[in-house]
Length: 418
Image (cartoon, rainbow, N blue to C red; front, side, top):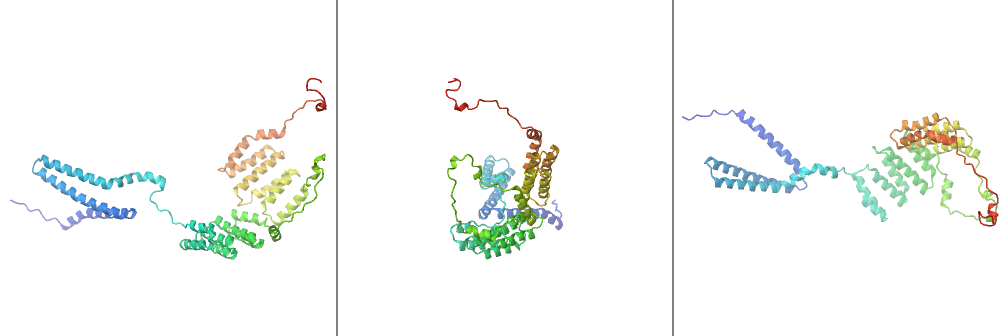
């Protein structure tokens, strides 16, 4: 009597197909990703075809072995089936072993070469710079233009174009237009903006001897970048802009005037009167005060004035006031603040200030710049401060003995009395 199996519902078949569909979709996604990342897609597709053929052969061998075992034990057929499986295994190993080895070694190689991550696209100007070295300035500008069409906001390319226009083609107005257009673009850092305008100011001074145009460019830095370190440095440079007359004189051939020298200079008892007279400290102080009245942000003049107050006038309080104005001015570079604090400590040591005051000055370096190399130097100086103050307070005196006068004019050998 035969038993008829009940019909399987259609929903049951569909549920059984869902895992197969998901497996197929996942396998297709993996194959697509591998195909996109592969350096040789054609070769990869050829491997897949060979793998599919090998799988068909594997299924055929499995069916053959199952048929042999179903009819009873057959040693010859079993050995043949095992040999076929070994051949297919060798076939798969030849196809996929290099890829598997590369996959296993890839994480270690990525530590050195960055892996398969594509670098960010960037402009290249090596060809343009080579043409510039060969004096092919038109060709260099053409190469730069091609790169800027792909990267219109690239700072390096725009500055290179401005340099060629200003320094090689003597077209400073075009260079200024290039820089001004770049300043209208968003995303440029304050350092790059200051560099571009400082370069334009340099070209105005060098090629046009125009300090007023340079002043306009430097003032643009303070307007575009207020309350920044770049603005402070621009103010410092504004304080020392040369005059137009000085720039013009520097381009003229200097006239050398030879004056009559001192006769018999080797027979003079002293040459002190030949040295140029030193500038009076009062005149230096007056000049520095006038400079600071005109340019209050001139850090160099204020620093020199502080040194004069401390060393010549012995007014440590006035020197401290000048240096504190520099130290407490916002947006000053760290290296400048560290130098002024160390200078203040030196002046305090020279002026016999209390040890606690000197130590407080050095501790300010550590507190304001704890991760700077100067903080470690300040700690070392604090550890040796007692020895430094002791050496300053008690200078070593050396007692000299008495010697017979005119010893070198006596006759005879030393110690013989002859």
